[in-house]
Length: 177
Image (cartoon, rainbow, N blue to C red; front, side, top):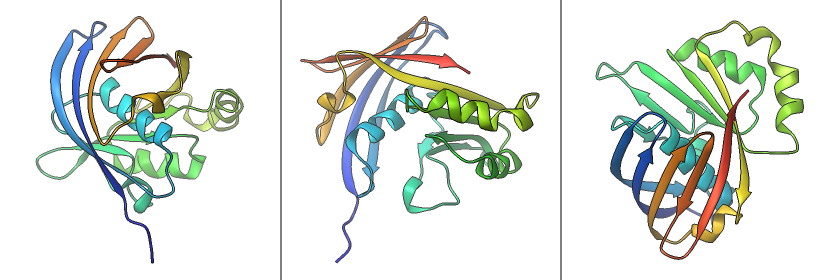
């Protein structure tokens, strides 16, 4: 019997001091059986960094034709395609063909630069693509914050994201590659 996705409810209070965006988001996240809790939390960080009322989680790992997150227009066009990890160049090209904007959030500190050096050349002048690297800096790992129902605060300031609940806080650096 196949395992189903685990459902998590998140109340996210966001304060992005870089963009002056503040808000509360009530989110439902599904964790695929093959996904670990840290990866799920990196998806949440990607949401927080790109936060918008129209941004939504997709089927992700359950559907290879969808990104981790996307934002669609009212007409169904994909305005923003958000990937997590270290996608192959072919997948990036497909995303660029389907969306007005593509963001990739890499979270493998020992592999990110090598991956980026391999794939960057064909995309160097493409203004539709932005690539970022997450790195847990303080009080990691992210999964200390995980519970089925999460009340989290996210502060974004000067290349750092701080995600916290009532008892723990994790600092994650983010840099554009």
